Amino acid sequence: AQKITQTQPGMFVQEKEAVTLDCTYDTSDPSYGLFWYKQPSSGEMIFLIYQGSYDQQNATEGRYSLNFQKARKSANLVISASQLGDSAMYFCAMRGHSFGNEKLTFGTGTRLTIIP
Amino acid sequence: GAVVSQHPSRVICKSGTSVKIECRSLDFQATTMFWYRQFPKKSLMLMATSNEGSKATYEQGVEKDKFLINHASLTLSTLTVTSAHPEDSSFYICSARGGRSGENYGYTFGSGTRLTVV
Image 1: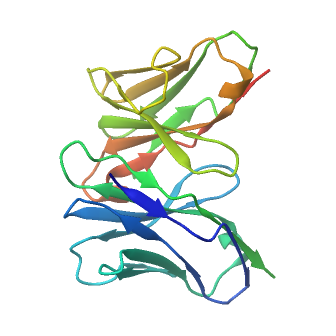
Image 2: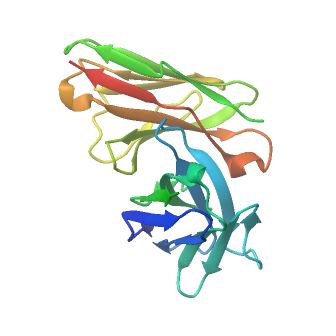
């Protein structure tokens, strides 16, 4: 079974500051993938970044980076130079790579509010 | 890029009626479709997984007779909420597996359907 834990229900951050959204996970799969999605009020799920469990380097995508600490089973999302448009719900998710375990399991999310 | 078109985006229906939600992959073949339900300010809960041409696999606690899923082709999957009741009001969103290798790392979401049963 897979489990994702996001312990920050809400965060308020000043514009232009960096923000870290926490995510810890648990799985019995030796190989897995970790995702972060942004969900604005419109409801669509916007893919932000992906980290494979065997990737040697932490993933980066523009202002997004993933702080992957495998031994601690954490995959925190770091957003640099936050913008007002970053205000949204953020979900951490994982998938296993074993047969029949392709579904994404989501955390409970963090509501990020950027303050001007 | 890979796109999944989900319709309708919003629907209001009367209690006791049925509602069909469609998800179409526009430029790729969706071998697997995942259907999620999301309550306000909550996470996405997987309802069922469907593979083209076979019966859907439902998650524990999801009524398969109430939430009918059909995946008749590689580009179309539908979720029908039968005999809808107010407690079925929710946000439903699909996610397709398939598409070009590496795009979205294999998962493309529809834009979601907000269902309100009155």
